[in-house]
Image 1 (tube, rainbow, N blue to C red):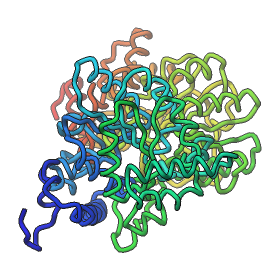
Image 2: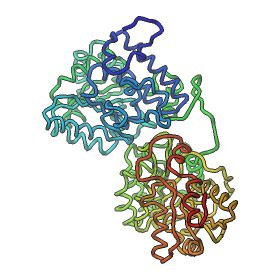
Image 3: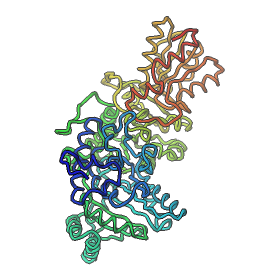
Image 4: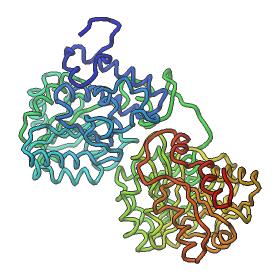
Length: 627
């Protein structure tokens, strides 16, 4: 290894094997270099800064002790996998993370052989790791499988289901509980209290000393000292067998998750164990960057920021911010309105509701199924629950939407944030499937607004709707900037807005795809064609009469949607015209039948044809013209 002062340790890491060439004393220096690069790079790209700053030492220790890719690392959610990427030959590309054709913001199996499992939703790591352990055992292999999960993941159903099966499935599995008291926001619920609150017990003193002695034996006197420092939080030092050992996992910890020496010693010890084990580490989300420590929720995942103070530029209010403000204002006047989220008060902007109407705000933790059922319970009591969950996460509650909400006709209000492309977050977070999985559910109303003002009208309509489940999808980020009226209007369910009537082309854009349709409309009119423009508003029920009548008069219909075309909004128009025996051809603009990559929306729309130019290319042949 070169001793040149101009060469950083990180520059020399081309793969995990290079980590072995560093001395133990150089590893903390490497950790600082990694933090510096992350803070500088993510200031330009945005990303999950706080979680990655919290796992720098853990990631180094894992690659120091184990041999990737033979040994497998699974990071729950995997948004904290940036350091892992840097240690596996991708450090020179970290400034491309979440950028089009750059590194993905989550682990991705097609990106590297070191990414053994790609994920973007919480609670998947333990189950997948257990499956890998079982597969390894069946093949007679002896590689290691390590699952890293935050304490919030243990509030998630699949994690608990996996814990229930570990001891009966494999003799060798390592689970690292990365305990920082945060997921995206502050953790809630009984398990969070279990991890973080002092538990009193008559045998506390004896158990404490036995546990501390075990930690010291494995990781050294420094680890024992650290364990005593955190014993006020219990962290299973007090009752090490209360939870995990009842599941059949031998418990070790807690140890300092930022002490590389202790981590390496402990992991070396655990890799030889012929029993499932769990290592409990204590980390700081955002460690090494004061703005991230001060505001861990903000720095969980954010856009670009100024390195000096972590500040970000304020812009026009997003749909999420309008949602949070509007529902809070409604709730102040309507005592029946409640707000429910699954560990996402910041992302859904229900933090406003939480601050101003706390008695009717509920956070279930990372438990979307439970949140949906909880909302159903509110509805049976005559309340008006607004359930705010990202479209991509609402997929988890699909059974509850059909079996509990729709079948019982309960007026739960589904507020589906990130409905449509989620840009830099990529395929795990794009909300491109909700029309397909909701439009066939009997009795469910589904809608999308073209702008901010109509969005507020729709929220008001939801607040006053009592006939069954009702859903609204809305985009990430900003709308076109339409001013919001002082008083919201009550919309008629299933009634579209006819903006303009024409005779040649019928354009039907859903939601914020209106901007693309308006561009196509302008070009068509420049070419001398007469254009009908319909704002459908309602995905279900469709305004069948209006759409049929206007489509019948046109030579071609073109639909626009921020959703996959398969089983999407455009297909519902085709079905409608078929049933009405209307032979006007239908062209559709939307996302293809594939998982769309990450990148800026404008880049991806251009690549996949969600543009006015592509619409014209499809429309003009039906008019006898050319583009």
